Length: 388
Image 1 (cartoon, helix red, strand yellow):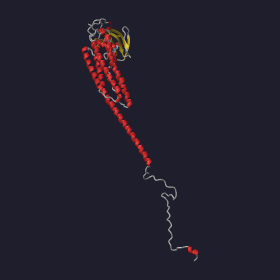
Image 2 (cartoon, one colour):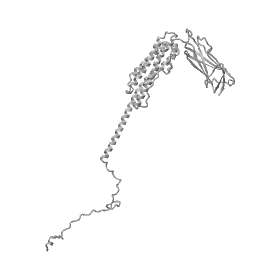
Image 3 (cartoon, rainbow, N blue to C red):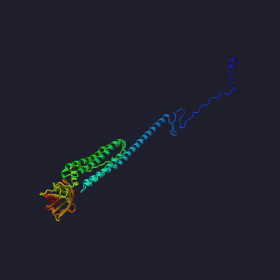
Image 4 (cartoon, one colour):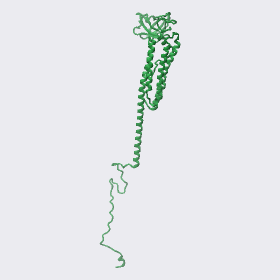
């Protein structure tokens, strides 16, 4: 053998090295050939787990929602607490306001009471003053919400005006108990000053308590509540000097006996009007009055004397067929005062004859004790009625 042949080693009996098994490439489900684009993502099954960043965002959103809910809950609780405090306070104020207003109504009724005496007046005023002081004591014990402390002080101020005004009026009546009728102008002015204190109390309550209380509620977001009001003088005209002078005359006996020296007694017929329409009748002139049913008449009677008068009879008569007549009584009329008396109703049925010819309408006012001039106590009017 050659040297070259010796270098070549053939082992016909050795096993050949196995080739690596080739991967089998088959078609994917859906018919996609090997090596093609991947099939679409499957929609079924579990979603992929959120990333840490997504979980962090979700947790932040949840925390914000919780905080907002807590804020609204705290605000709601705070608003409910404020509303409850206002409501509780106003309920207590309402009791005081109603009691004080009732005292004012009692005063008005007292000053208008017929036949009121000095003794009765002083006794009743003492009771009203005590009631006013009790209202002040109750107001001092109140504990308002912090936003209403200033307004609360004006409740007390208003109640003090009322107590002081009543005390002033009582003292003036006492001081003037033995004065003569000629002292009335000065006395009435002093009594009116006491009444002005009572009127001022109503202004203080309304402007310095009710107004600021409403403003405080708006600022605190409290709704559905109303600050209590309290009116002591229902009719402010009662504080007029002339009105208090008439009351003083009545209480101090310058009234009806006719024995009062140095003054006049008497009443006048101021005017007579027919309704509907309000046509004013004039003596000596024929009136044409259109009616739609039963007419009514209003007679204005004025006390033209210097004293209070009582139990005055007023009569109105229509000279129809049959005759129509009604009578009314004025229980009390102060000097200078005018009272209106109304006549009418089904009995004022105008006959067909009265619709063809004018009829007389007569008005009479009874004379009072001591009255000397009676010309103004009687009137006769010619009236032609017609239907509308």
